[in-house]
Length: 170
Image 1 (cartoon, one colour):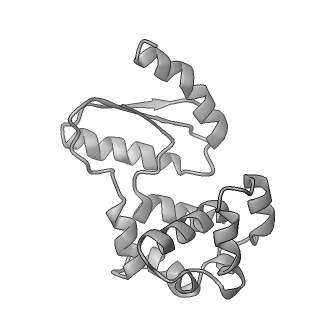
Image 2 (cartoon, rainbow, N blue to C red):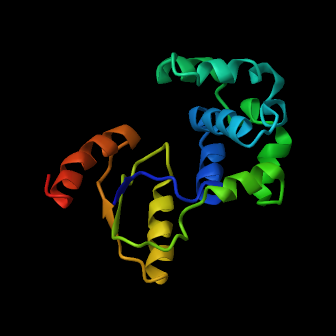
């Protein structure tokens, strides 16, 4: 398989990276999705001003640019303080348990996997791919790590396509 730009360690590396870098597009998506899938009240995850807004923003009819223009500039303005602390402390809250349920960095592989990533990605922490590679390699998984170079998230994904096509001889 070929995976591009993770995230693989959502509960640790990616959620902390998103908070530190005020990646509210990702945090809003994460809160909205997990509230729906894990039956967690959105009001328990985000500030009151965004409880009614997030489901509409992530409903599929709003562009990324429009979503980003609607969300606040800092993650502290979007995410409730107790969730912010929960992520930083890696506690046993319901939300953190849900995040851990989706970590895939320590999976035993049956087939070879390539991890493609961009070293200048500000959406998904490049260390997520690097550390996932280290853990999977230590588990004797058939995994390879390919640094696409100094690209942002979306440019890195696009630049991975020819390499993936070559990998699968398409």
